[in-house]
Length: 265
Image (cartoon, rainbow, N blue to C red; front, side, top):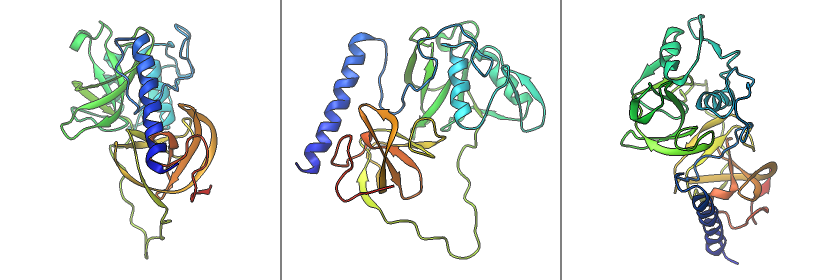
C-alpha cells in the first residue's frame, strides 16, 4: 500500500476520533495540537504536588510548567530576582509573577501562560490561566486549559488574552560555538499532518520544545516505540534537530509500526 493511502488512513482515524469527542461534548473545540496528559484528569478538589486543587486551571498550568522545569511548591514559586511569591487564583498570577521577576506583557509565545482577571471575557471572579501551545501570525494564541468551557475538564481554543506570563524563554536563543557546527543527520523528508508538539524525548512526559504547524517539512532520522501512546500508536519519530514528535501526525506510511526505510533509534 502506498504512502498516500496510509497517510489518508491516519488523517481519517484522527477525524473520526475528533468526531466521537464532539458528539459527547458539543462545547469542546477539538484540535490535534495538544494531548490531555494531565495526570489528575477525572479527579477534582484534591491537592496536587504543586499546591493547587486538581481539575482547575491553576493545577493544569502548574503541571504544564513543571514539564518545562518551572516547579511550584505549595503554590509558591521563587523567581529570577530571588524573591518568592504565592500564586493563588488564576487572576492573581500576573501580579505574583511580575513581583518575582518574570516578564508579563501582551505578546503570546509558545510556553507562556495566558491570564484573565475576574470577569474578563467570561472568566469567573477568581480569574483564569491557560497554557499557550501555539501562536499564529495574527497574534492569536491557541491555548490548552482546564475548567473554562468544560467544568473540571480539558479544552482547547484560539483566543487573545489580556496578558501573558513568560515563565519560559520566549524563544530558543542561538548559541555560538567555536569552529564549524557539527553536521546534522540528513534523515528522510516527511511533513506534519496537523499541529504537533516537539519534545526532548519520545513521550508526553518529556519537556516541550515547541509546536510545529500543520504541513511543516520535517526530517526524520529514526523511529522508536514508546509507552506513550498517542491515538493508538506508540511510535515516535526523532527529527534531525534531536527533538521527538509522535508519528501519528506525520506523513510516514505506517501506523503503529516502523515505516520502511527508517532506522530504529
